[in-house]
Image (cartoon, rainbow, N blue to C red; front, side, top):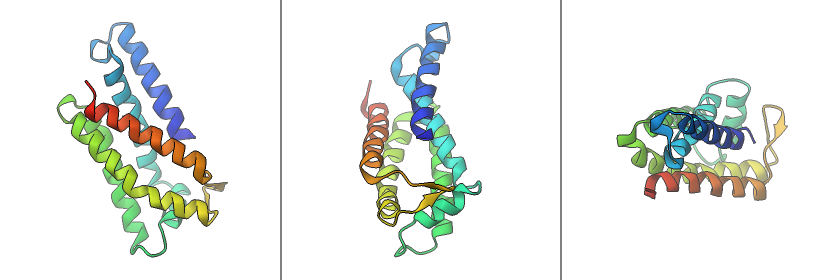
Length: 148
């Protein structure tokens, strides 16, 4: 739920900043870039901070090798993508890459839900709501990548 809150709150606050005079944020697409970047900063840092890191490592499907390395690499990619979202020249490509990354990581969410894992002491989001959230997040990336 925290990533959704970060996306929505970051987008709304950025849009409000645009309305009160921050010209680069005076439209919904750049505000959405800020919200998505905030979401990926939040999720990216979770790849490195305990107890979230251990939970993310446990989420990696058992058939994949080196889960710790996979979590580290995806965390770095999320943080780099968040930074690239904030640069207008790279935002479209970053959004497309992050969308593909979310699709590539989704099997870990499916695996975790099926195995009824916990993440930082909380049960992982059940599969149906998690899928709906994933569709929303990928759609936000698509709007940035293919939008105006």
